[in-house]
Structures are given as C-alpha cells and as structure tokens.
Length: 371
Ligand SMILES: CNc1nc2c(CC[C@H]3O[C@H](OC)[C@H](OC)[C@@H](OC)[C@@H]3OC)c3nc(N)[nH]c(=O)c3cc2[nH]1
Image 1 (tube, rainbow, N blue to C red):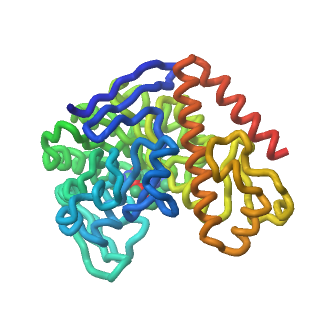
Image 2 (image 1 turned 45 degrees about the vertical axis):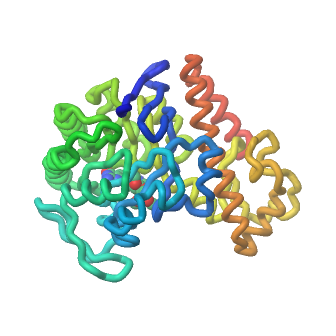
C-alpha cells in the first residue's frame, strides 16, 4: 500500500480527511506530538496513542547525535526502538542546527555544526539528512532547508529560499521512490508574499507528496503568520497535505485549520505541561498560582482523560509547587488530551460544515474562564 491522502469534506478552505500509509492512517487535521529524543516526554507510547495521536515526531538533529543513525538502524529503527509502531515524521535537522548548536557554518553543500552533546563536528548535506531519516526509519521525511528567523532583510530571505529550493531538488533525488513513505518540501520566503509564492510554485513543480510551510512561528505576530498562510495556500496542490511547522497554540490551530492546514507539530502542550501549565476547555490555567491551593475541582470533569477528571487542582498545584514528577506526567497527559480533543472536534465540525460555529463556541468557553 502506498502513501495516499484523501479529503472527505471541506468547509471553506478547511479540509478533513486522512493519509493512509503502510504503518497506519493519519486523520487530518492532525496534531503531531513532539517526540524529540525518541520519546514524547513524560508519556508512555500507549498513552499517546490512546489520546488519539496517529503520528509522532522524531528529531533528526538529536537522534543523529545520540544514539546515532547507524546504531539506530542496527537496533531495528526508531519505531521498534521507542515502541511506536505507527507513523513517524522527522524534521531534517536544519532548523535545530540553527537554533540549538554552536559554531555552525552553512554553505551550498549543507550545514556544518558542533554537537551540543559532546562538541564533535558534524556536516549535514541534503543527501545525508535524507540518508539519516532513512536509517531512522522515518515514514515522512522533511527536506533540508534554511529557516530564517524574522525579522530579516529581503536579500537574506530570498537567498535562503532559493538555497532551500536547490536543497529540495537534491533531497528529492536522494529520497528516490519509496512507495509507503513520503518526502515533504518546505515552503520558505519569510514574510515576503512574492517570495512565498515563488517557493510554493517551484516546490509544486517537483510534484512532492506533501508540502510544509516553514519559516513561521519564529517570533512573528500571529497576523503575519496567518497572512503568509493565506498567501501560499492557493499555490499549493489542493490534493496534497499541508503541514505548518512548529504551530501552535489552540487559537493558532483554529485559525490555521480554517485557512487550509492539515498537519501541525508544536512543543507547546508537552513543554507547558512540564512547567505547570494546563490547556483546558476553559482556557489555559497556571497550576503554580496560589489561587488553586484549595480548589477541589478537577481540570475538566467532562473530559475522558483521567488526568483532567480524577485529580483536584489543589493536588496538581501541590505537585507543581513540590516539583513532583507526577505533576509533569499528569499535566502533559491532560494537555495532549486537550489538543487531540480539539483536533477531533475540528475534524467533526468540518465534516458537518460548522467549523466557524465550533471555533466561536471554543473561544467563548476560553473567554468565560479567563473572565
Ligand atoms: C516552533 N516554531 C517553528 N519550528 C519550526 C521548525 C522545527 C520543527 C521542530 O521543532 C522542534 O525542534 C526545534 C521539535 O523538537 C523539539 C521538532 O520535533 C521533532 C520539530 O520537528 C518537526 C522548522 N523546521 C524546518 N525544517 N524548517 C522550518 O522552516 C521550521 C520552522 C519552524 N517554526
């Protein structure tokens, strides 16, 4: 069986459907929990699956440094290693190099950087990035690209976008034909509409299996991010998945699904959970705050997730204040559950042609709690 994306219903620019591939089906719109170092932090794989996650992310940059791609292949690949038999998407590592490693050089050949683990020097070309993702066993592989942080000048954005296009072509050649797997291109172009359109058109000509929108969620206001999505969307093939990298808050997800995005990844729900923050139907709650010290209510008595239903806010406040491991576990569990429920709610609403009403009801519930 190959990699097939089908759309079951649309509601304005929003779509709901699924990607079917040998390792499983990804229902869209989809939120993909981040599993950086071969683990979704503080979660068991079975728990992540039970929340409704169809795919998780692995991080090429981290995994190539430790345990290393050749060793991972000898150990049977990432799925076997982390006991996640469902689809895995891996980033190409370029973004992480730019954000995590010291002493990095970028030229036509690729990126050269020092490991933040042991200081060793590594060179990653488009070909090597695809080779590493293949050794990890990744089902959806991302091209190597150069993501420019905003604000940036036009010349820098244009140079990086053109380099990323040349690297997309090299990644497509290196990836070759792998029927049950996919290599996605990444649209760049910063906050310059003309460059965004040029990037989308050129990547579309490569006839890839999916298209990511990169270079966003890098510090720009939400309005700029949404404007770039609206600019690019008409130039991406309607019958291929669109993946908005690194996004985002629940509000970002509502806005972006409405503009035609199908896939998302973000460290927000997991990282926030480890820092005492709960995402709920009633908005975001900081459990470190003293006002929860004697609040006997659970986070959300209507939730199917035990973390949201079976523990009082007073207890969660105590765990967070005491830096107890269980605090991180319960809030991560709650947050991923809320994100998956939000995506399931959007998939249902699009199928029923009522995404606008669903979004309005969702935002109203957040506002009530904030008040
Ligand atoms: C937050 N805003 C954000 N994240 C962007 C990521 C990285 C996503 C990456 O973000 C973390 O790495 C740092 C995650 O690990 C903690 C990775 O999960 C494994 C995730 O990989 C898909 C981008 N990756 C590429 N290759 N190109 C991009 O233009 C890009 C833009 C992003 N904006």
